Image (cartoon, rainbow, N blue to C red; front, side):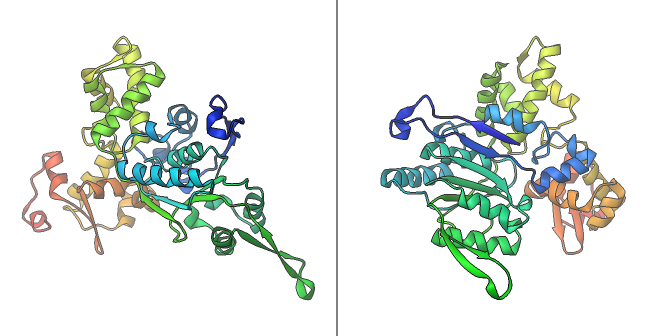
Length: 369
């Protein structure tokens, strides 16, 4: 799917008095999206940080377009602001950028903002979708001067494609093999200077890690999104949604949509704290942002396996889930906030997990802490 976005056509001062170019965004499914589509539990999971089918069009409307509109990540924004201003004043392409961190924190949004701030074209694709050399070569040879190219999950590029990309990153040159056998020859093509934004590769000038958001930053994001959507929400209501969003703006916006629907039907369209609490309770999202699957996973470890350790394969069989889904989707947040430990022998529920469910660990379980 390709979406044409014109972000600066009304402000010609940012484009040397000319109409700014359209930003072509190639939206391609990542591995986390594919996993969600193949697993019905993940597909409908409201607190998953992985994007699902109906997120893209909704997020596009809420996505900030400028650095000063982006909430949170103060250190990242400061570094980017300096680098962007310096590159813009010199009329050069920005150094290649590495944005890394958990899904849903704004890596794609920041990549888009960088292009907007530089007033250049933007193209997005993903590592798993680039299968042959011709795919990547076509993209690189068609890049405009100082254009921003964002490749999601670039660490999943095939090795042969990595070498092509690295050559373009370091030397702005592309070696193309023409012909086969003894008559084959190499033709070197120049690539216009461009800014590459990706993940998990060392050839970058800027390395910026995105952290989970604070509840206060998420509250501001919820209030901003509600304003764009035309939804009435007060500060306590926004904070209630923010506090259950697992530190992730994508989840905050998704919960806001569900709470908006509830408020429209049962609360006259206004979201206050009691309305948000009632809606989130109906959705079975508790004060830590846990949903039914999180609770089921933790209770399985506590009640069936005396707190652990238990292997991920066993958990997958008991929960009727894929092992990859448990490791990549369910566990990271539980480990991040201290409810689950991952050990060489298996998964162990922590003291915080017992306290959350009001369960007193027995003597054997207490020895695990």
